[in-house]
Figure 1 (tube, rainbow, N blue to C red):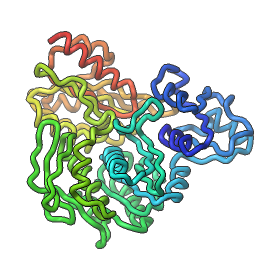
Figure 2: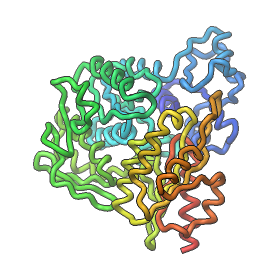
Figure 3: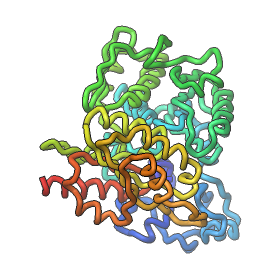
Figure 4: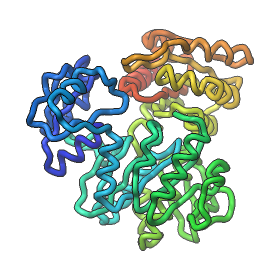
Length: 437
């Protein structure tokens, strides 16, 4: 919502908005940033809506009995969901949709960054905050360019991805997240059919192979394809590789991020950009906020903050860190009761597969963002099964208790989605570990 708000404000529209998090915390950094941009923030009680509005846009997470929904309906104001409105925006540009159950925030942000550096003057609406787009008046998740190109993150979570009509599409992977794999596969198939130009697909993903059209372009890290990474050298915080004899340096770690970079290289090359120019700017990319943010890397101590929240993302994160350190304390906050219930088995399997004897897992209580939901699962349900298989894991209810134990581990990884305060917690962990060491 903040990305669309900033984007439309930059395009000259008057924007007013609310958020229950802002009502609870007026010092919220996004609240302050939006206000500094000239966006009006009102209480979420309906009082901020009147007949001067042309359109009311609501997140699909907003309940129909929320006061602002009721007020907008009573005034006869047109109402759209966020993805419905985003679909309207997509139609207005030569849009590039970046889809996948993992990596789409990083890939869409990386692509927008490269296009901006290459002088293509792109527009961008994403879910993650590109660190190099962040200013005092831009959270980093949008960019208002002067061209007709738009890079957008096409999220499948609410099913409305089927309404997007992009010119080009990137499909990164297909795994369990918000929906069963078969359900998501159907959505991705529709997105492919709705794409008028290039479709660029991860040739290493077995689930995508079942829905990929013959004319699609493929990228790969494992076998021959249209765009294959070869001579890969994984370093602690970067990856070097070659594509068609051009050497690239990606300054963010992990093989999963290599798979995020390849489709960016592919689509830019197909748009006529030489490999050497793409390589020049890829090495400048510093990443997405809360995607492997390093808060401490000194004296043998390492503290990382990451957005990983589904089994695929968590596995990629743990594989990357396990290559870097021998003993790791993983601190995970599951996001939402429904997602935790849906992915319970896969969460457990992921931790059982990736936790080594030297590692320890701490689960925080499930993050609750408000609204009506059945709270019939807890972090204890996950931990009990993980420890029964011989892995070291526990639930810690209060973050302060973890801070008091800083020093038990030299490497800590804090991860989970949606909760902005996890970054603050990671900073606190880094501070405490620095003081104790």
